[in-house]
Length: 553
Image (cartoon, rainbow, N blue to C red; front, side):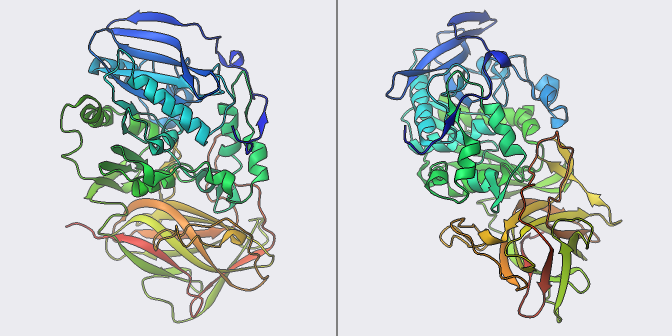
């Protein structure tokens, strides 16, 4: 193991969270054999990780589906009990379903073996825990090869699961273990720095610190993500090592993303699909709650059709489906699907919507005047706490994809944290809510963030629709001087009818706020002090570059 990691004692013991020391044992259920605490060797240091295997009680080889989890393979964890507002109906999962993993009660009768792993250094698995690392990916590859060569195995291995169980799929697939047959990344980030730890360079202070606790049950040492995040404020080799080589992935992939996980999975899942080297790949991008969508029976059948083809050689898989399906939302739980050949959608036209600070409008035409709109960067009430800009459409408009916000902004200090949100308002001026962060139903159309000193773009990674920040050095502002900021607004898909409004909010604090005990993207470590001013018109043409998808007749 390299010396780039910092380690600490575990944050909790397995016993304190319902675990018990490993003891290999075999259980029988109707039509199913369950092997608990199977020791699987990995790496070169003689370590083992522990897995539970659910497989058919038959001599017919089964297709392994592997789920790689830090949350505890021993612990049935119905999503609906942990997150009552997640939308997962009780009848959709059995008492064998662990957190964010496939349900053995469904998959085993269809000829699959579910392999649930406690990842290295978590629970009773050996070694020291590192997260989203090359070492973890190598251990995962060893498990894939183990599962593909068991006497009960049909030989081709699939990967399934949500969030962490999805994020590591990018990493291991890039290593191309010989027995890996197909992957199903379902809401999984791949760039830990940009997508989780620092949004636009602003430290995330809610989910990122919280998740360390969830991952930290161990009998050994765990990676000290808190100390490492503080020690690596810029995107350096440490963070690059936690970013997979997406172009190296070659196996068939069925990728599922959503518009609803801004600040966590939406960006990375869609970028993962776009950059995958796989010749055979499909994308569903929806506007629903992530866990409910994973366990919804119709979607489980879709997963099985995909795996049936590539792991068991039966059926057409998803060949009769378009490569890309995108849901264009109208309101919470309402939307229509558009078929496409690629992501970003090939029919999208990028068009500028110009900000006018004089009347707070957005317009397809640039304003014929200059203007400014100021707000208090701390939202303290000493001045307006936000600047807003709006357009009421006179004909239906569909916005599907990333929005690039170009703001010319001045501040009274050498740095500024800028928060953007897009909202949909109905014809009466009321906010139309959408699914957000897996639990909420009053979410925005889209969110974006930027710390002004991080504004330098990575020209190699950036595209017209997607400004990617380099995060290599600080570029201070000159107090009082307008400076161009290119803000990545995370991808979304929304339909506006004639008479409905797109509202842009610009402010210096989080736009979406929920009670403290609820985990979502939050940013309380700010550099703001004093007023921010948005400049519009003339040479300082602040605008949104929006992805307009033609409305079908």
